[in-house]
Amino acid sequence: METTTLHDQPLPHSLATRIAGWGSIARQYPIFGKTWFGYRVRSFLVPLGLLTGVLVLIGAFIPGSQAALVRGALLAAWLVVVLALFLGRALAVLVCRQGWPAQREAAGVVCALLFGALCTLPITPYTRINPTPAAIPNATPQQIERLREQTRENQIVNLVFWTLVLAWLGGGADLLAWFRQRRLLRENELLGQVARYKDERNEVEMQLSILASQVEPHFLFNTLSGVRAAMLSDPARGVAMIDHLVDYLRATIPQLRADRAQTFVSLGSQLDAAQAYLGIIRARLRRLAFEVDCPPELRKAAIPPLMLISLVENAVKHGIELKKGPARIRIAAARRQAGDAEVLELAVADDGVGFGKATSGSGIGLSNIRERLTHLYDGAAALSLRAGDEGGVVASLVLPLRAMPDQGA
Figure: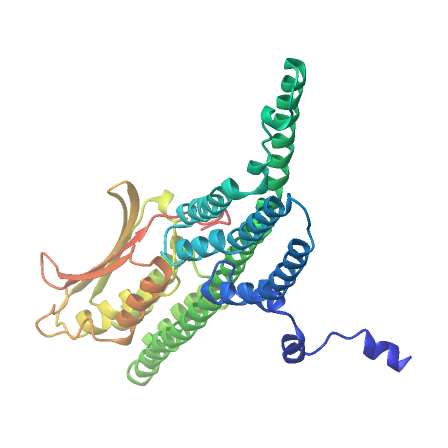
């Protein structure tokens, strides 16, 4: 039982290669390649040598006046085989080394094999089968006509026979195998591209998860630090901030959990989170006023999570907190046309200290946003900062306008 099992096992690849013939080794390389042609030529040498020996023996033992004619036919047959085996294939190899586009290369290979066969066809023995009426003394007109018909029939039969032989010897089977190999190589390349795209997508998703994990603590820890400071200085105001924080967490914790598995969330959920956050800040900075302006139909637009809250936090930290006196933050969402596509523009404007004294643009929030936009939109989205008309900074986020699935804002 054990011996039978061993006999049914395939040979190791290294051993199979060592004992394989030249033809088998040639099939391991791209057809009509230089290396393939070298092994293919070697695979023809032994059969060609045997054919040469057989033809020489036949020609040596032919007696009589027909010996010269038969020897000539045998020599022609030998030349036909040699040219058919090598000429078309050599030309096809030259074609494949030109680096032409796929369709042009395929046409070139077919033409190369066809040219090799056509060059060989005129010297095939069928052209020598052409008896003349003079070969039959005292032939009647009927006999001459019958002889001519017989000659034409023989030539047609021989032409069909040698055409089939040349199609086989001249690389017809190799041509079919080449087309099949090209299709399989193309399929394998596509499968490789799909695998690479999956790997790249997994890598991008992992990077986005890391970036999101950096943003969330950055925002939450700053908020909790503000609550702690308020509790130490004004407990009543601290209690109010805690109430606002509870409302904020109740609205955003389920969303934050889902965001880890989602690339996009609804604009409405991000606006609600930003509004809750600004409510916490206003409880701490009573001089702050804020406004959220968004058309109802845009609340279901799809945006990456945590970007808007990062812009709002950046406006508070680098603009409002450094300003003395009343301060204002406005969040606005609008639809506009950019070429043939519609885009969503989100603007967070503050009237804080502006670029002169602020450090806006250097924090982890903005750098994370730019990196995530590159991964998610491949150049179709942008984040820009500019000075506001009445002071402060306006951060604008421009995204392709996409709708979330109908699951509520």
